[in-house]
Length: 594
Image 1 (tube, helix red, strand yellow):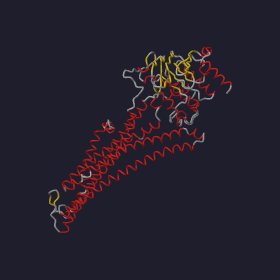
Image 2: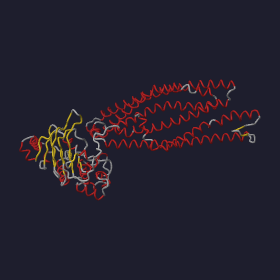
Image 3: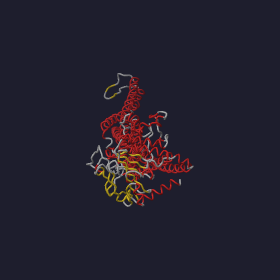
């Protein structure tokens, strides 16, 4: 299915408005054809009548002998204004309608694209730059309006061409037929340049996406850039990407100008030929001066849309490149879909089982290999191991951020793939190593886990997370803005807001992914005391490198080389002298020799 065919689906809800705009366009085209007529009437009728002293003027079969020439001249000039105002007014309404519809279809595509990006699994986002996805939502989606507007202009041009050609046919068939000679040459020019312009437009979008990526990464990491004195390097990287985009844009503009020059030359040659024939007809007495003037005006009205159609074809090729980039995302298969018979869960015991679980981002590189772990209801289980052992990946399978390559993850004995993702994730609270905050208020950030929460519930969650005191010390309390990514708060404060979210959500399953690794010992101890309150009565899964913080939990699972090599309680595992014992003794040695 072509890009333009798919784009039409977004226009269907606005079909009635579009048809109305099309009818207005037909009326406007008729009025435009009438606009030059009053001057032709003046040149052919009024001026000769004044020069010869005769009258006998006829208009639409009516004798105007009862009116003076000045009165007729005044009426004809007034008619000029009436035609202009009517044509302009009708054109204004048609254009306003198309612009409104165009903006609405852009809104529909943007919303669908943004929503679909949120529904895609993390594997998709892991493989793609976030700036590229943002560029497609913010900029590529706007090209759908260009396609809609251009298709409407095509209709407007065709109506104008048919009406203008009909009017020319009534006056001089030779000139009318001659006006069609240039069409094959114009179509050939469009065909020659269309693919080149489309490819160049795609290249521009990709390179502009690269510019946005470099700018976004550089500015979001400004502290690190300045700390390492890499400002010149980052500016150089940005300039290189911007230069690449500039080169692509310059190449595109050069191609567009060449194509425009070719189309303009074709039109100029055809216009010269028709003026030659028209002048010869005036010399032969088959056309009047007023008629040739009227025909020359119609000729301009004919060739403006013809030349415009060539530019439109190239514009639509460029626009289709942007829309195609949007459809590339919408055509992406969801690797973690809700099954047709997926059930909604409202309650859960929080009993989890990893049954022969294997996972890899690619088929030839498995991160997890046949992991078997059981987590009882209300149990706290810590997952430890070296970097790259697969801890975070394993726990990401619980809320179905990914699906296992092989094996199953069970919740209360049911495969999590048989549960809708939304209801499954409603059963899980997650506290990450670096709490992600939005550039909104403290209140909104805490309530993000439960949008319908009352003010009292938000405050209660903050108190349980021991965040209320520092929140009230902020300039506007719970209404204080946290800054981009929570930049106005310390790491510990951001972490407490993340814990407050989890308290507010009150889910039966809690996932803690390195919740204290970025904290100093004093803050870590305070946060752990808060987390212990949060874990009480919940099934809790913890990932950590801080062995001391989880040594006394209900069960510890040691991952190595993508599989669970040991599990048990801390003291028991130390006594075995295996993988955990090495991690434990290494951690204690590090504490004694900081």
